[in-house]
Image (cartoon, rainbow, N blue to C red):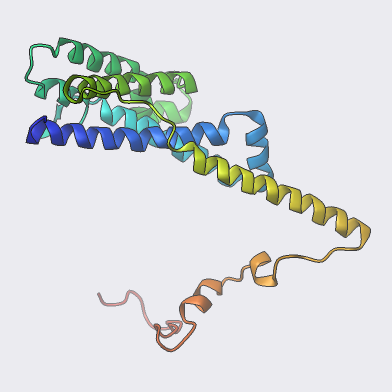
Length: 240
């Protein structure tokens, strides 16, 4: 329908958008309310703090990549501007306008990419100046909607259909939260049983206290697998 180059660009741009959008769904599902953050902190606060940072940085990088210039440093990019350039029809003025709006909506994220995610900017890290534009959940959501509007135009123009912005990443995050809530309830029950002297763990010792050799024990469980390596006591470095 679109031809090889235009069709390939649209396909890969759409797949990248769904990947970024689904991870934003997960971010909002996990960290979208105080009650959910409290539940995550009750299980492993520092771990979920790390996950929160990773998801947020991933989404900011993703919306930047989708709205970068079509050509940088002599290399072509898959982005919404590429779609606007490849469209051969006289009706593409609206497509160009939407691509420009998407670019404008994601400008805030580029300060994060250039000053914190992609580079360790000295001024930013030393606290001399805050060079990061405000990056709120509303701004990220608006940026994703603006990118979606570009892809939606192509779908409506050439395929005579709509492109819904569905939440495709929040279900697995919600299932995880349900499991954590049940685990929290189990911990509270165990704490009560310990206080009353009626405690009996439902987990075996290995599940509660995984040893340092647990992974190796599973890997070298029988003779058909690799032999367990011996500790090396020779000189370093080893020849490669």
